[in-house]
Length: 204
Image: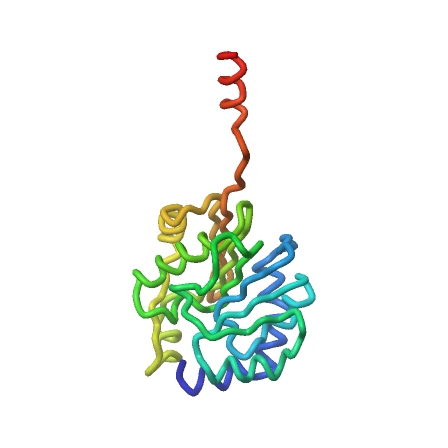
């Protein structure tokens, strides 16, 4: 991120906006479960609210400066704050009930890395887990704000196919002025489908 982004994302204004408007819209009363992965928390404007909504939060941040400030701002015992890469998550399979990424995807350097992040999020979610993301639209203003910073805008219409390819189902994209949210779910697993049970019963 450039200096302007670092400054704005560290302000109390952005934290209030995130708590009052962005997160409620992103989550819309969804159940996060007991262990949430927050990808790219920055200085933690959403982290405090997520700690109120879930018993455990693990925050993964690429920037060392941000992670130091995040730990200082949120010294909660049920928060784990780690440095790491969103496209190569350092976690085992199926360990999170939900994943949240606020204004993260456009900071990845390529479309391929975005797709790797989608696949990695799917991998670390438990069956039935949900992925929530918020992004900004492409345009001259957002490109100007990201001067000397990575800006790889995600085309909203591409989200359906790309998240489905990563393994997600129930993908939705909704718009607000200047941005959009993505919601997707990892399919729940059953020990045996109803059709399979019927087939076995018929054979028996």
